[in-house]
Length: 463
Image (cartoon, rainbow, N blue to C red):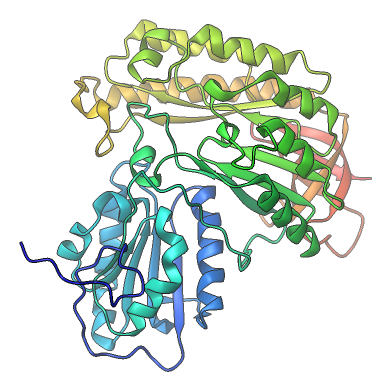
C-alpha cells in the first residue's frame, strides 16, 4: 500500500485522500448551513458559523446563494443518515455550478469516507470532534482539494472552543462545558460519533459566561451529552460548584443545564439549586425505562431504586423543582410487565414533561445484536399509552399553577393565540396577554398571573 507524504498539508493529522481540482472558490466566500438535531448541534453550528465568518465567509439564506453548502447532521433518530443523503441528492445539481458541499456532525463521523462514495460531489466530511481544525480544512478547500476529512477517534482530549461564536438565539446563550460520552448505553450511537468525554476548564467556561452577559444575554444554558459528568481539567470546580459560579456572574438571571445522566447525578446539584436563585428550578433526568431488567439490557448502570433516590432528593428540595425525562418504549426484549413498570414509574414521579420514543436500531451499537422481536405496531401502541397517561399527569400538574404569579422570560409571539410566548424558570411554556401595546422584546421578563392551563402550557395575563 502506497503512503502519500502529507507533511506539506496544513495539518497532516487530518485524514485526506486529496484530489486537486484546480478550481478556485468564488471571489466572495459565502456559505449556507443547515442544522439537524439537538441543542448541542444547534450550538455547534453557532460556533461553526462564527469560525467561518472569522475566515472571511458571509452567511446566506439559501443553497442557491452559497458557494459552500454545509449540513450539520444528527444520527440519533432512525434513518438519520438517509435523510442527509436525500438532502444532498436534492441539491447535487448545484455542484455543476461550482458550489462545494460539506457534511458535518454525527452522520459525518458515523459514515466517514463512505459519504464520498455515495455523494462524490461532497468535498468536506468532518465530525464534531474535529471542528477545531475547521480553519485549516477551509484553507485546503479553498486551495482546490476535493476530499477533505476531519474524523477524530476517541483518543482526542481537545474541545471546540472559540471566541467567535455567532449566537443565533435572541434570548438564550449556550455554553458547551463537556463534549463526548463514555457511558456506552447499548442503544446509543453518541459515544461513537462524539468521542470520549472531555471537559472544558472552568476558567474558560466562566470567561465565556461573562462574554455572553456583555452581549446582552441574561439566560445561559450549559450543555453536554452528559452535562453533570463534567470534570474540571483545572481541578477547581465540581459540576455543582461550576453551576454556582455561573449563576453568580453579574448580570445573569437564569442558568439552565442539560442533559444530566443519573449515574453522575449527585445531591450537591439539588443543594446548589436551592442555594442560588438564578439556577432554574428544572432538571431533565432521562430514565429510559422503569424496569430494572430493561435498564440492565440498556447498560444504563443504575437501577430503578437508584434513580428514584435522586428523584427523592429533588422532591425534598426547598424549591419546587420541575422534572422531565426521556423514555424509550419497545426496547428489544421489553415485556408487557417491563412496560407496566415504566408506567408505574410515571405515576410515582409525576413528571412535568416526558419525551417518549419508539426504539430504533442505530449503527455500531451493541443493541444491534439483540433480537428486536417487538412489532412496530406494538411499539407505537405502547408509546401512545405512555403519552396519553403523561398528558393526563401534566394536565393535573399544570392546573395547580392557576392563580400563581410567575416570572416569564419572553421568547417571541404566538400568532396562533395572538399572545406573547415565553417560558417559566421551570421550563414550562407560558402564553400571555399584556396591556402594553408594543410587545416586549425577546429576552425581557414579565410577571404573569396564570389564569388557565393546558397539558403542555400555561396561559396568563401580564401584571
